[in-house]
Amino acid sequence: MVRALLRDLLTAQPGVALVAEVTVVSELLAHTHRLAPDLVLMDWALGGLDVLQALRALDPAPAVIVLLAGADPEYSIAVLAHGGAACLPREHLHRVLPPALLQVMAACGKGVLHAGP
Image: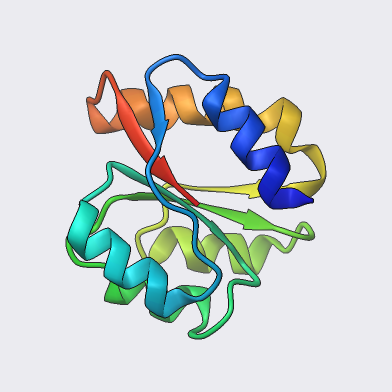
């Protein structure tokens, strides 16, 4: 359900192209290495490695927005300290994702993002 919502939200954003969808961290790392996206949306519950380990393993490192199920300030701080661009609550994606995409795009200096969850 979250994946369908993400797909709808991303495809509705001008200048955003969805280039891959994955279910485990190993796929994320392989696609990120092969496709070199500007932005990755990563759910905190993605199968495989812990999100913090995945952030360290991304090479090249795109901007990463991590989707969280709850508001844990310590976890958000750790994600940001490990290179994440933002943490967003899954519960309010329809409201918070579009402006977060614009902020991350501006911070990255990108006019167009190729986004993959």
